[in-house]
Length: 169
Figure 1 (tube, rainbow, N blue to C red):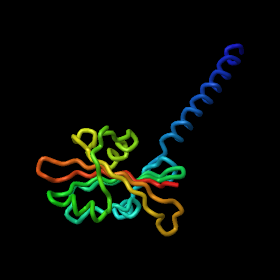
Figure 2: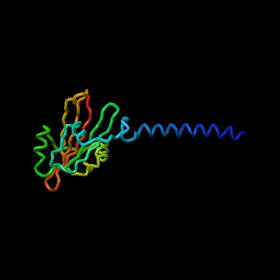
Figure 3: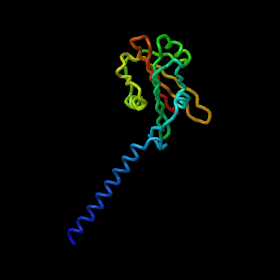
Figure 4: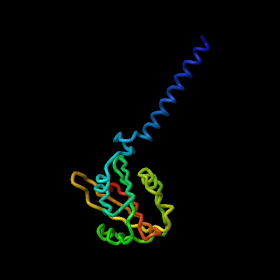
C-alpha cells in the first residue's frame, strides 16, 4: 500500500511533465501546412512571387521558394540564378539599387528560410551586394511589404539572387 502511495503520485507528475513538454514542442514546431504560426506552407512559385513582388525573369534557372505563416507577419523566401548579362535589366525592372554588403551578413532566420526552400547558402557565396524596398499592400491586405535582396556574382558572369520578403506594419 505504501508503495502504491508513492508510485501513483510519481507517475502522475511524470505524465504531467511529459505532457507539458509535448505541448511546448507541438507549439514551437507546428506541422507543415497546418496554417499555425511558424508553419511552413506548401504554395506555388506564383504565390511567392506575388507576395514578394519579385518575379524572376523567364531566363532564370534554379528557382527555389518557401513560405512561412507567421503569427502576424508572413515571410517568403526566394532564390534563383540569372544568366550572364541579365542582372542590370532585372534590377531596373524591380527599381532596386544594390550596394556592397560590407558585413556580408545574412541573418539566421533568413538562412533557415532559404535552406527550407532548397536554395544555396548565401553566406558561402563570396562578396554579397544588398538592396531593399517597401511595397504597398496587395488588394485585401492591410500591411505593406518589406523585401531584401542579396546578389552574388558567379564565375561564369551569372548572378545568384536571394530574396527575403515579409509583411511590414
